[in-house]
Picture 1 (spheres, rainbow, N blue to C red):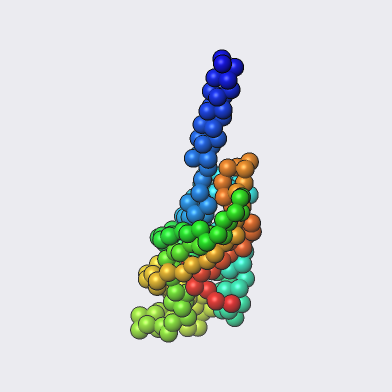
Picture 2 (cartoon, rainbow, N blue to C red):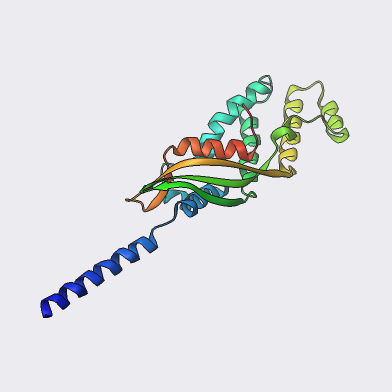
Length: 203
């Protein structure tokens, strides 16, 4: 009888431990929403929980700078393109991840759809305002002055860019038992999709 009671007690304890473990396990939708928020906020401490090698800002800059230089006809310098890129990244901190939903889940794998606010990158290619035209005309005749005027115009446009609705992406993710977090199976693609859709950048 005592032996049976001991076995029952042991079974109850094991069940309670298992239940406690399952309760502390992060849900896929919560985990991916937290990760997306950390990427937009450039929260290094939060990102280190997922992967201490993540540097989403630098990855974005490495892709953006040469592309933007080419689109300017190589008029802008690398430093000027970086200044514009940094403003784009800084602006992302004002965006909110509105929702996160589990599309499908099985064992340690899941598909999660996140919806987040976005900007329209067309602010960079809009026709110049009267004030901007005046600034550009004043820089005619000096390449350095024209470069500086263009950089200032782009930065000011980004700073005042309004939000333009929401975007969404669906990400495949897997539960990392060692780190105890849900992570995209392709972290680099997740960051790229998040940033490009947050700024509505089209290929």
